[in-house]
Length: 304
Image (tube, rainbow, N blue to C red; front, side, top):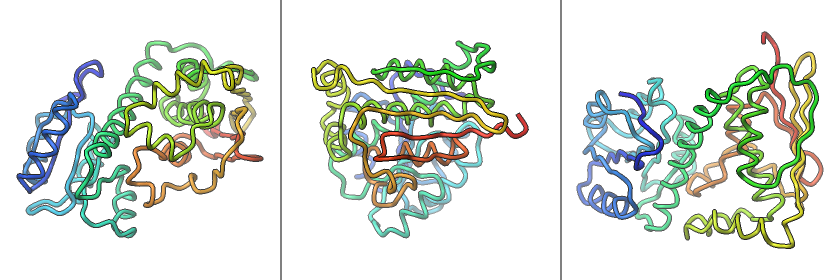
């Protein structure tokens, strides 16, 4: 009944009442080295989840008999062991109001039928990686617990994604709810590297994820003379009412305003959720400054 090890092969649950859809989805995903379990509708999926909850993502058809996708999603979000498992909603209906309804209910990933194989794999990989990174951070927070609650003022610099992960652990432990802060802080620090210092733009990342080349491009740019000297600077300050974390990269900035809310237009992309989810789930306030290469995140200390 537990979520299992993050070191095993990723497991997916596909819920769809069309046998052909189950077959083609299973074929594509098994070829990509996922373990796939299928259910023919929401009722069958709910019965299965009563005894097997070790999934890294759930691909869920919206329109099904007996129990449709939205009804099953609502049940998933009421279960502590399942509420964090990412749901990828499959739909033939791309209207903004339908997508917005799913986003509000907690389906942050979408696939429009008929889908392209590359986009399917990119979306699934993004959802699984997000979930596994969340669980990895939670495990590391427990394993590396330290007395960072005494941290008052500090400054840090880093350049790589691994250094961003290590700094996430330190600064999250300095906050009253480390697990709440960790995922959002990780997203902001990673953004400062990839989109800020390394200059990878939104559309470019979409293409790299579809091609499976995102990590390779990160490593290539980190060693490139144009980017190798760039650092992300992080300032930490504990006040009486809040902890303030200021993250500044050396990039050209970006238009951050569209990313504060997770819009239906980006629901079909394999990324673009980090800032809005950090704002909704991890911090009490997020404020971008200047050209967008400085972000100020605050965590309230009320009642801490």
